[in-house]
Length: 331
Ligand SMILES: Cc1cc2nc3c(=O)[nH]c(=O)nc-3n(C[C@H](O)[C@H](O)[C@H](O)COP(=O)(O)O)c2cc1C
Image (cartoon, rainbow, N blue to C red; front, side):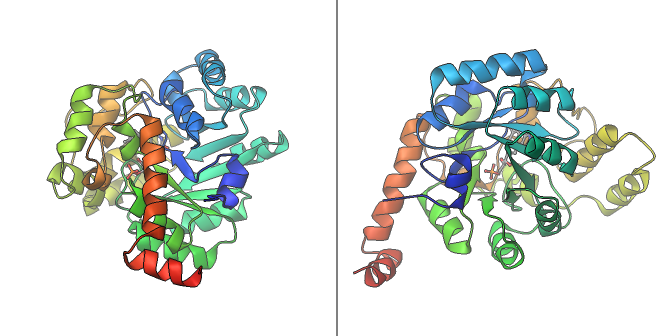
């Protein structure tokens, strides 16, 4: 089956499956196998710490695959972000993903350099703004997903189906997606690709501990650790206080403080968010989403991507409701 969409055309990948950014450990060890298997891998600049190390990792990825991959720049978390961006541009990484805060300055520079810009957001308002600012596509992360949160964030289904009415640029769906049914559902909602974080954590190549991978396999989506991480709203008073501080402290510091408030399930003490994150710290803060419900094993990246595509094709051709509907319009 031909899986091309506007997103695969933009990214140059065979399948509309994108691997999420991971502060602390998102390097070529995972990104290259994803690209090699027909998906689109992402190297997270902040995980490499310095522009020189980012350049080395881009070169390492190129030695591992001819497939296309991108670089993620997380505003507020990525150290030396302008230099990181220039490194990705010099290395002609074809698509640069930005995230976490408005990134139109980066987007303009990326476009001036002749490369593509995709911005990741968690609200429809920010998706609309990114389109206005010229982004080539947006990733919209629904409440079911982990990492950056907003009080205006919607569940993945409502967020994507509402956003497709408002946007012309392609939408990539994220948040709780981890299997063939999630991929098909996202496409049915009007998205043209899926972006998966938690599902790619539980793969052989992901450079995190076996213990954490097994935890994802064993977890249920209703476990408070995962459910509250994704769904619990911030405490109203703390949220109001941090919003009042906006503009009175540096943007980077404010973004970190905002994230601390948004991740309200974390104990107030001991939570440290900064660009020196290692894998353990990143996992403690954003260690998995409601996608755990569909994680049953720890396959290789190739097994995962090929399995999702094979199962999606079986569903479309099978005896279930989607197969009957799809078959009847295609025979
Ligand atoms: C451990 C971990 C660290 C993450 N770090 C970042 C990050 O630094 N920058 C970023 O843009 N997204 C980060 N994310 C979010 C993912 O890129 C992605 O948006 C999210 O996992 C999607 O939801 P899902 O987990 O339900 O697939 C992180 C996710 C996890 C699980």
